[in-house]
Image 1 (cartoon, one colour):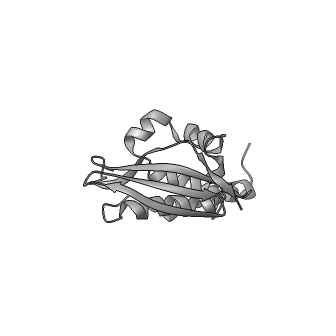
Image 2 (cartoon, one colour; image 1 turned 180 degrees about the vertical axis):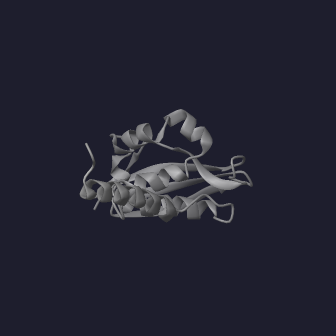
Image 3 (tube, rainbow, N blue to C red; image 1 turned 90 degrees about the vertical axis):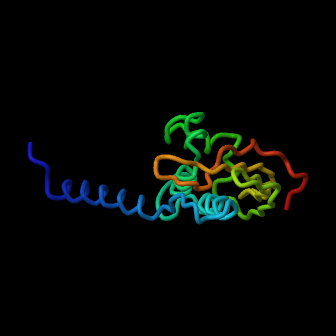
Length: 155
């Protein structure tokens, strides 16, 4: 059975959209500061489904340190974790504030206050380290994000 012209067009469009999406993601770069990395991830999660479904989660995955990826498993596991009870407040949140805690030449930590879409204010601890190998060349990448802690207020 021969595929119809419409089905061939749809398959080509989906393949092209996947390539465009991958090109739209910001890639780890040693020129980015640790705060730039955290902000990039938070901004992406704040508009999770722009320009496509789960684009924010995919952006966060781009900055997941290789150590983090080994712990969470492949992207599909990571996406399920992000939508689970410990991190789902990050998806489509209404605002965030990043507070630097400490930084060395190889590691950086931040407290991040996030106001969820429902108005709950939660605090996460974001920890980054420089990554090497595989073309990463000293780029700052996320090693861990703590489980949310209530920040004691609602708006």
